[in-house]
Amino acid sequence: MNEAIPVVRVTEHGTAKLMPDVDRERAWLLTVDGAPQSYVDLDEPTYLEFEYARRLGYVLDAVAEAGAPLEVLHLGGGACTLPRYVAATRPGSRQDVVDADRELLELVTEHLPLTDGTGIALHAADARGWLEAAPGDSVDVIVADVFGGSRIPAHLTSLGYAREAERVLRGDGVYLANLADSAPFGFLRAQLATFAAVFEELALIAEPGVLRGRRFGNAVLVASHRPLDAGALARRTAADAFPARVEHGPALREFIGTARPVGDADAVPSPEPPGGTFGIG
Image (cartoon, helix red, strand yellow):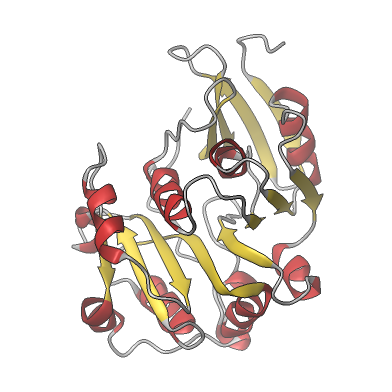
């Protein structure tokens, strides 16, 4: 079905490239403007190559009884790595995937098609616009992984956005986001303060080297109104090939420090990664 040669296409938001993995027969890496966006193994959808994706996967595994179907809203589509993961691990789930780049979605469905019966629906739309139009109390999980190039758009970082996410989630729902920053963590601390103003429980998952300010990197935000089993999550992330720490409770409040919630008028994109941080090919 797929020839093992790269596929390049200029889409609405950049130059997308699908590159085959020489070590896995039907696995592909998606980059946009050279920045890795997704990795998908069509034969093994539970395989998560990127460390941050595995951390999101660990949380998704824990939000409900193993195998129980979920209703999930994914803001940011990429190659639909996590929607495929949920469909494989939680059959019967219903998932909406929202991405502003229609041509990118078309590229993915053409070359990395979703199998029938996955319960995944793709929508070309702005993430915040979709969220604001969505009915309240309608999903179990929101996964936000939206990057314009290598930066999270400003309108997805504000208190207004966080309130919309909380409105759309069911009472015991969980919000997950892939963020990125480096010391002194002005963006990350402000994001934590913003979601702490809306949700009762927060956790942050990141590599120790990132948290110690040694380098720029990804951090997974978890927010909910129900208590999080941070201990179980910490054990899973610590056992990963690239171990991560789970910060929550007093330690996380100390990390937030004096950071304040972000209003729409003050919202800014996530910081530009240092040259070469995420670039490839």
